[in-house]
Length: 97
Image (cartoon, rainbow, N blue to C red):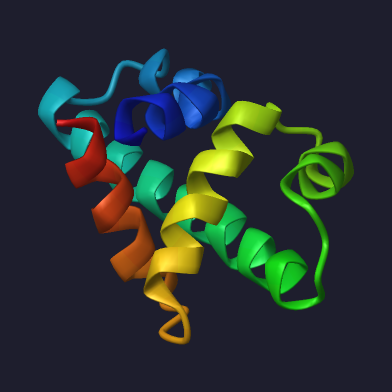
């Protein structure tokens, strides 16, 4: 899931990479931005989950693949009532390994 989240946001940061900055600095920045963007998506998914929306409805609203949103929902439901986006992100990354 972690790789899937990174891939999801990789295109958004491709432009930064093409500007010719130091590759190590870019990778660190992209990784940080990717985590931030993924956490933002997770926060939105948490809000939709708390309002009672299904994974399918949430995926439609956020224009994300249902399978990805369903994975996030699974972790959210296991984390209930602790809805911390960073913790959920880490759990998704661990689940992928």
